[in-house]
Each structure stands twice: as structure tokens, then as C-alpha cells.
Amino acid sequence: MNVGLVASYVIAGIILVSMLMMNMRVSNSSVELTLTQITREKASTITDMIYDDIPNMGYNLTSTTTDILTIADSNKIQFYRKLDKFSPGNPELITWELTDEPVTETQNPNDVILRRTVEVNSTTEVTDINLGVTRFRIWYFDEFGLSTLPEDGEFIPTPVNGVMRDSVRQIYIALELQSPEPLNIGFTGNSRYIRSGWEKRFSPGNLAN
Image (cartoon, rainbow, N blue to C red; front, side):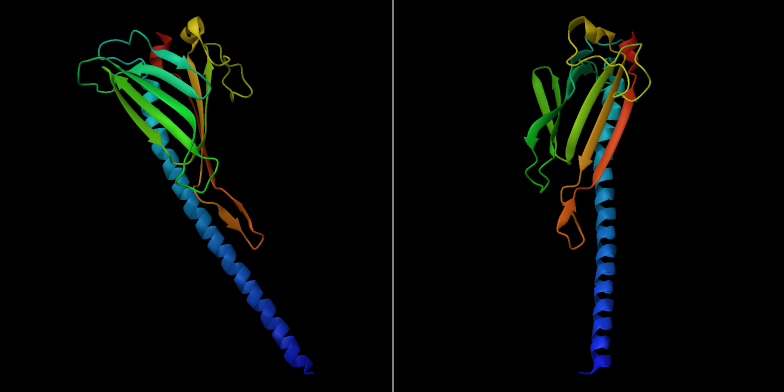
């Protein structure tokens, strides 16, 4: 047996495996960056809508709406606001709700439909957001709410009913999205979903009136 030949084959095999491992790491990194960017862009699409809705709750053309916050739960919020600032008419009733309806177009078993509903003058427009939402959690604070994360602060227990709804001054929303497809990790067969999180505490001006 030619020891030198065997050694050269072993070294070549080690180099080949090392190259394959490096290529896989580079490929995984590229896929992870792509999935992360896509997930963040989807999150931005949703948060742009939330940024428009929540601060403007209670808005009407010349005054605040008669009612403002009508449902205040941990996964559902409903309120009045006027969407078109240049057109007279009744304000719209806006509902954001995290459903338990799965998104069937993806491999991810965790994502569900986030639903935004607009009702006005006996017409209803439903927008099902199936961008990979896995969490949509809401906390409510009165004027004495602590300026910390809701898990550490004092918030109003949900659902917030009756007179307690009138005491809400701040709303804290946490959103999480996951990638539609899993990211495979090495040769182990393990995989994980890319996550993108967002949290924001709002102080809608009309709630203080």
C-alpha cells in the first residue's frame, strides 16, 4: 500500500469537506440575510398601517368622535376614526384582530391571519394580512401607567370593559413576524424560522380629551 497516496486522498477529502462546509455556511448566511430582509419589509408594511390608525383614533373632521375605543382586548382593538380628512360623513369603525386562522400559503405552522376591518354606513371592508404574523399583543395603560415594558409595568387587565375603557390613555402593541419558509442549519437537519419583532407605545391625543 502506498502510504503517500492514501495520505493524499485523506488530505484531499478533508479539504473537500471543508470547502463544502464553507460553501454551505455562505449559502445559509445569504439565505438568512434574504429572509431577514423580506420579513422586516413585511413588518414595515404592517407597522405603517398601525402608525396611521392608532394615533388617529377618535379623529373627526371638526372634533373627536362620539365614541372612540369600543373594544380593548389583548389581541383585538376596535375604535372610531375618520379616514378621509377631506370628505364629510360618518367616521369609520376600525378593528384590528389577530385571528386563529392559519396562513395556508406558507410552510410555517405558526403564522396566522391578522385582520383589519373597516365599517361605515352599513358597508364592511375586510383586509386579511397574511404576511407571517405570529404575534399581535396589546396592553392598555391609564394616565398612571409606568413607562416601562408592559411585562414589568402596571397595565389595565384585558378585556377592558365599561368605564375602564374611558381611562385608557396609552396603548402598547407588540408585533412579531416569522419567515414563510424555514432556514436549514448545516447537515444536522435542524431548521428555524427567521423572526422580526416590533414594539411601540402610543399615546393617542384624542384619548386624553
